Length: 104
Figure 1 (cartoon, helix red, strand yellow):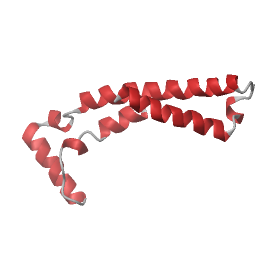
Figure 2 (cartoon, one colour):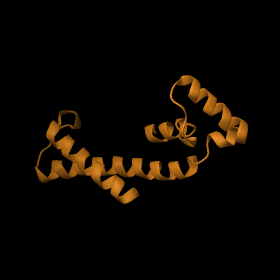
Figure 3 (tube, helix red, strand yellow):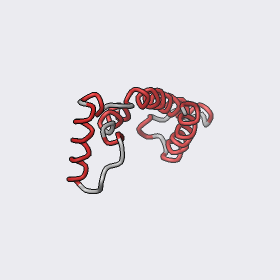
Figure 4 (cartoon, rainbow, N blue to C red):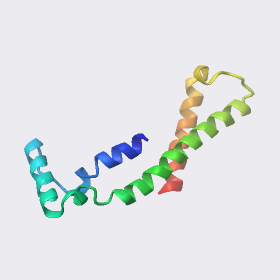
């Protein structure tokens, strides 16, 4: 959900380069809005979401699968809240490498 909301909220910012500073950003937003209306503020959001949604799902699934794998491989029966940090980092690292590789 976080990836989707950040992608949708930053879609207007990705419309093109803006001059530095708040006033420049407001001018750029106004120029984009005047040129194409509200729709132009969300140009490109479809392809962005088509990449973010599978990435988020795969990342979550890979993380949970790797945690389960490490628990079974090391024959531990710990609670997820008490799982050692090293195992969580390893599971997150595998998910962080696997999800973008498959998605993009």
